[in-house]
Image (tube, rainbow, N blue to C red; front, side, top):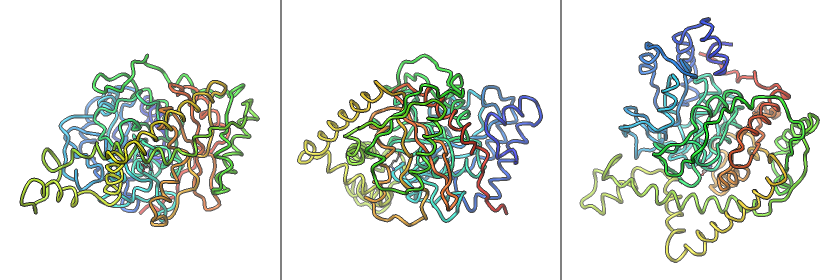
Length: 480
Ligand code: GLN
């Protein structure tokens, strides 16, 4: 294995022992990018010069000299932040997102900004206005999305780890499709300041990493109260690495029967259930539960997310920043032409849908009803956590599919069935690899916890990772 195939903690050890220098590490990643990026296309912008400049100073902190990637909807001062949209193709933020400040304080080296479905709307990274990203495990397949660039970069050795954002599964689904660990934190624990919003009540930033230990390390850095984000919670600074222990004894795990009764890829279901059996063998108590409203999650999510998106994206009108149409004769035409020319098909679909949902005629019937079902779902999930520590499900109903295989929007929305309840309830969840399909594509298992239950999630995921021992498998990309 080359340096660029190692985890953050392995790199840290080598750097601390002075076996290697930050320059050796950076070179290894840049060489890998040079070799595979043409095929994987994980990045929108590569900041190799800035990275070289950065390691020339004496970096200190828990991430000193560690090369990371950032999803391109997270603001970076002086570095363009596009949301993979023509609307923001040339937008250069004047400030850093809080998470970027935190990574910088800990000495991290940013390699670049990764591709996403435009404004984080999608599950394939095929809705980027610039290019499609492909899955390093099989270049004909999608990496998932919307944080597909972040996941593909980490899987291919083009970054040691990355930050993604998760509104309805966009950290967990691409992590699962690319054989990685993805953690969506409790709503409010990671500042959203500087994250270009898709749906504020659902969005959270989180880590995509090669193992659970790295997820804990990054979570330690990015969590914490931020006065610049009004939804950020006041909390004690936790040390999530304290939960990196192998202990499942007495842990109570709930399996929602509504999910296991559904019909989906049997290889996924079997692999997840086999992993659950192994947890049981290590002393976990596993029982079936019912969460009746969970079957409405996809409908509720797409009503609320598109409603919020329609209002969030109203600011892109060609006036203040971003793209402006050159073909307009008056102001109203300028708004219309700007938005028609610079938003892609999926973003437009969601703006139209969301604007309708929020209209006077439809608001009570859709938006208000969806909010009520959301409240019901939160209550049902809270009830489960009165008796159980964790809820375990597959992360996705399928493994990574071929690019272009799913064209019907409703079909693709249904793929989010297992991930969206987590965002609706504001709870944390982690995905880790639990096996491979017969086509050698990774399968992810999802572990959900109660609000602020990241510690237990990490403990369970770490224990399972040790039992399964899949950690060292890397995709065999032909290197040029
Ligand atoms: N696939 C979901 C959607 O398209 C989730 C996206 C996300 O989490 N950003 O909305």
